[in-house]
Length: 233
Ligand SMILES: NC(=O)C1=CN([C@@H]2O[C@H](COP(=O)(O)OP(=O)(O)OC[C@H]3O[C@@H](n4cnc5c(N)ncnc54)[C@H](O)[C@@H]3O)[C@@H](O)[C@H]2O)C=CC1
Ligand SMILES: Nc1nc(O)c(N)c(N[C@@H]2O[C@H](COP(=O)(O)O)[C@@H](O)[C@H]2O)n1
Image 1 (cartoon, rainbow, N blue to C red):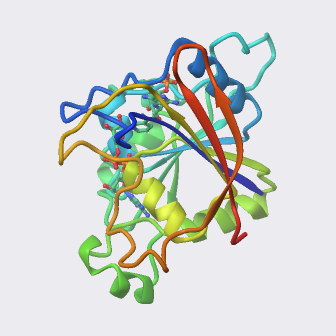
Image 2: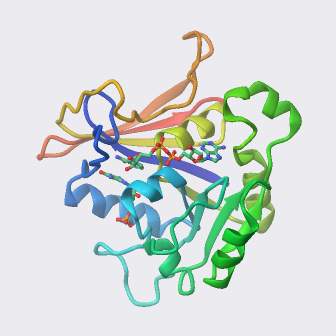
């Protein structure tokens, strides 16, 4: 299975402003992203991304020739907080959509979401993992279990579209093959503005994830697209 992490950042590594404004990519770059979606079986995002962006996560720009099937949408949402009025929920009857939760998710929420066509996967972290991540209160979904299951189902290509917390979990668990970053000629700033990778972070450079630059694309609008390969996989 190939896992690609894609995102757009400012030159200071932010993926959103302090107010959650996140329109960083140009229309041209979004066309490229939709091309990536077209090659994917699954698009995965975290719940905070859904709460902030109310995304559709479908193939639209340029590429959606008749008959093109949208990828399965997977939302990582420990407590099943996804709003019933969100575009994802409203379209779940037309596009396969899975909500990955923990056993702490309220069953009344799960019932309502199932009625609207979402498929629920309950994937708690094991005890060992919970102890390591005390700050999570044992409330995070086990992404390793999720990807094992997707592999068993025959999923070949997964596109992860953020946000920062999900990116951290994917990187920390070595669950990525490629990272594609569009660096837009912008400076966003703000200590609390969300960065490309959140989480607790590595304590030393020695521990940090090692990646290899494989391609650079320079666009006339000033965007730079960097492609990195994971050298540990
Ligand atoms: N510029 C860009 O390319 C993109 C920007 N964004 C922006 O990023 C922001 C959201 O990012 P974040 O706040 O970092 O949240 P996120 O979207 O990464 O979601 C994180 C949440 O998912 C849940 N979760 C459950 N299991 C988890 C696990 N194993 N690992 C990590 N999270 C788990 C937790 O509730 C956690 O708080 C939004 O403002 C969004 O607009 C998001 C995607 C792309
Ligand atoms: N590639 C990229 N560039 C940006 O500037 C972005 N803000 C994002 N965001 C991601 O795309 C999702 C929106 O998808 P739809 O257009 O609604 O289909 C958003 O939720 C982020 O995952 N990506």
